[in-house]
Length: 250
Image 1: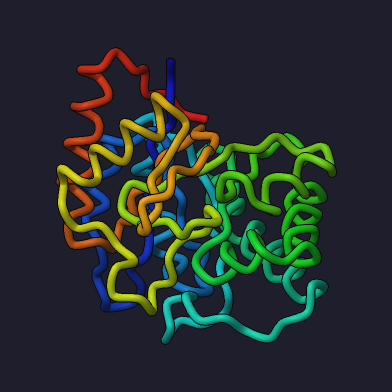
Image 2: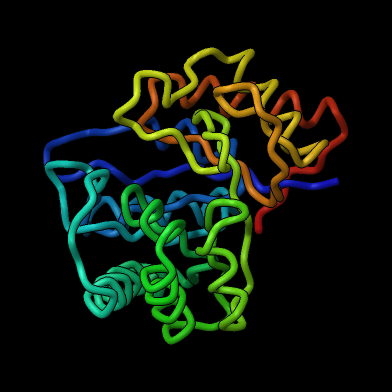
């Protein structure tokens, strides 16, 4: 049994530091790097790619909506064609820095509201998938398990990785609880570990209402901006290794 452990990183910009990338990257197998729209900038992208390469961590693009103030977590009324273009634009930006370091983009994971919109809206999911396919059809598209992001990417011929979350709670339909709700995130390490172990070993998660949901777990996400991100990543790695589960990049 094996699993990928990913984290959303490279989210600092300008004079604003963010997250503990230097400590987290050595512990994960895939890094989702912000591409400048919801967070990150050219300096941070460059530094994060270099750090990921030095630690043999899979490099992923983390394109988001153009909403720096809202950290890309607010929905926008945006056409599928515009979504296609903004995804391609951000992939191109990150790819430029990959080239100068002799690295490549291994996977693409939409960020925040774009991720959730693609999980529920077929046209948006298709636009995201088409952008990734046209950029590089060998790239893996990461999306929420059992959602349109996965099915539309697979219909196009892309390789996919179904993502599950260590630090987020689930609704009864398998979607993530909205961040507008007070119980959206998990902050207790033991609770996060129990959820991860169940998802990886049983392919199931318990919703906030106690319903058991089937899902596919190819990669586990811990949000780099979470207050407990480093502890979660550290403890999840220890727990999975103890259970004999191999942690490998996508």
